[in-house]
Length: 118
Image 1 (cartoon, rainbow, N blue to C red):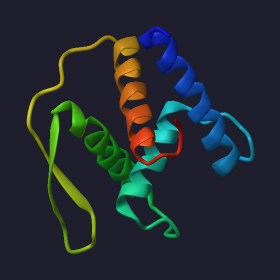
Image 2: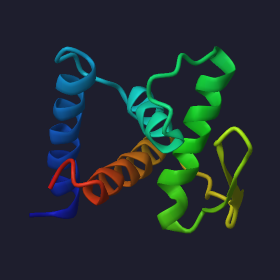
Image 3: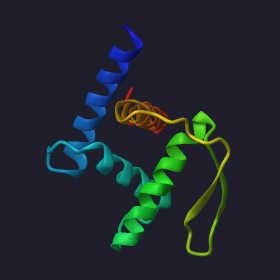
Image 4: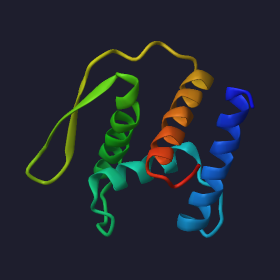
């Protein structure tokens, strides 16, 4: 199976799985999945988040998702348990579609590591 086809198949499987688990079967978009990763990484799943917190959760998720690609590196947890990352390498300038593919690859890799999908 070609790499692009495998990514597409895994992505669709992941979206279906997460939609069933968190959205009553509705389709989650890329931003919603990034948000879920942020909540998972923070580890405070039963907490209500303010708007600023939600933006920070998405930032945490993006850093964590792109860490294996060499763009970010985990530094420390602050006193409130929030993870902090430092930039290791600047992201390349990508078109919107290329950004989407990169994030989907990173998300699929993340959930493969977590063994939610295969």
